[in-house]
Image (cartoon, rainbow, N blue to C red):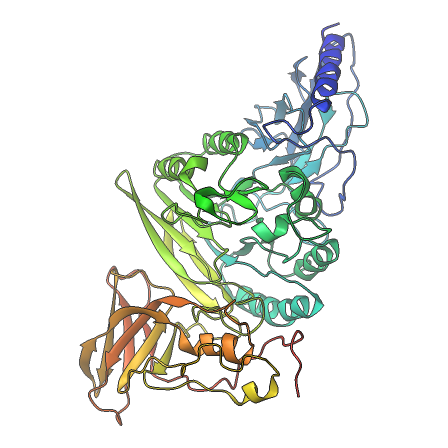
Length: 571
């Protein structure tokens, strides 16, 4: 009788909610459809009541109020696993001593998923994509059962492992996809061959226009690789598929991501590190601080509540790494805003032994430091995999197309560096003649109405100086020096200016007319003692944790640079 009453109440609740689909909480309508290939996490079965109103699973009685339940078992022994965190995207619970979880599912939940514990392999489908989730198909009366199986890592918890962070692949067309397949992925796989327990995660903007064909191509591109790719949403991934503008609701805007890669908010453990992946784009909301973008930057109330519940199961002596797309930085315009839990998130992260943010979005490199409650929280903002939308082999600020490499040992991030695509590990800076005026013969092959965007020569006008672009350092924590004849010439001075080498390429050669130009935050200059003598630029981490980075060769030409000029006419 109790179960019948619960079912009637649930039906009435759904009917009442359907009268107001655009409620202030911006929650999605339930869906009985969805692509489940490679993302089911295990078999879905239904339980029958053995007698009366009582339902028992593996020795656990299912409560009358439960609408979502299931059993998490060891793949080898078949025994239930306790203390596994399971979520419907709104609330989180742990499995009991029998391996059973129970949830009063949110009325708009579309998936149920688990947080993979450190001792177990990441569940994957036949395509090697993570398969830690199940789609909820509301075809029968509740409660709904979804079981999961986990396989122990043969060597136990991986205390030492490597995470690759790929920001903004941002493919707009098939040539972009092909460059991702032919340049980025071979580089990632080659690196993974020699890395210790490697994993990878994108940091949003997997696509440029949120079109199904490119979601399909990108999922296929990352499938069956020698490394597992986790995924994160970006603002371009939210756009309306029809016209690439604002979708009708936030929930409409995440349909493609959910279809191809699962929940937009989830977590997993590797070693002694808890990773949380969260969507911090409030698509369709008014931008803060007078911004013109089609979204606000931050978390909805329900997203903040989910994050709190997820972190409530994480011991304080662990490291937490939060992966999202929009930067936090100072919380100003275009950043994750305090109004939407920016400072609250940083306060929460400060409770753990160590915390880091892995960020994309800017198509430029920056290491930002937050001081919160006596803790240092590192925000790693990455250069883009695509650089400036695949129009070259570098980002606007000079950072090469590439990805971040993070090496963990226990709760310590022992090293982090940036791997340029098709570049060796030692390539951590680009050096220029401060007096060079940049030019490329390619400009003569491009028809344009504005052959000189700037109207002045592209140069720093610093004859006799070496200019160094060192993209992965924290200013103040590093010492950058210029050496000649085994003697220190000077401490190089940080300065803010246009990255003329890249600015010339995008403005004059590619003819972007201002779209991909700007200042670089990591330029240093030093005056040579002898213009004819060899030199060396050294960047040394004062803490001794990373580097040193060394450079000896000037970049003067665009011989190894290539881009997609499909939108321009070539002679």
